[in-house]
Image 1 (tube, rainbow, N blue to C red):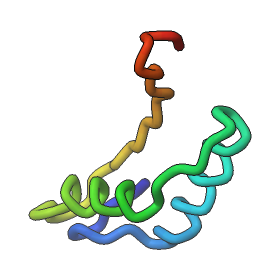
Image 2: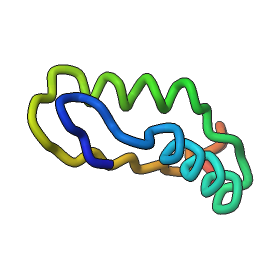
Image 3: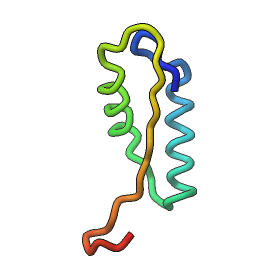
Image 4: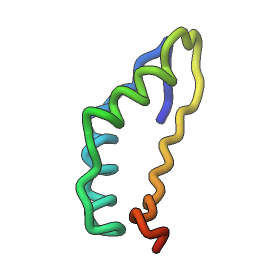
Length: 66
C-alpha cells in the first residue's frame, strides 16, 4: 500500500482483498478490525510517501501442526 502522510487511498479495498485472499488461501476469515489496527499503528507518524506491506501468515494450531 502507498502511504501518503499516514493515509492509504483505497484502504477498504486493500482490506477487502486481504480478507478475500485469506479465505481462499487459508480457509479462514481474517480479523479485519485487528488488521486495520496494525495498519494504523504502522502508519502512525509517517510523513511524506512510504510503502506499507501487510503479510498474513498461517498460524500453527495448538499442537504445532502447520
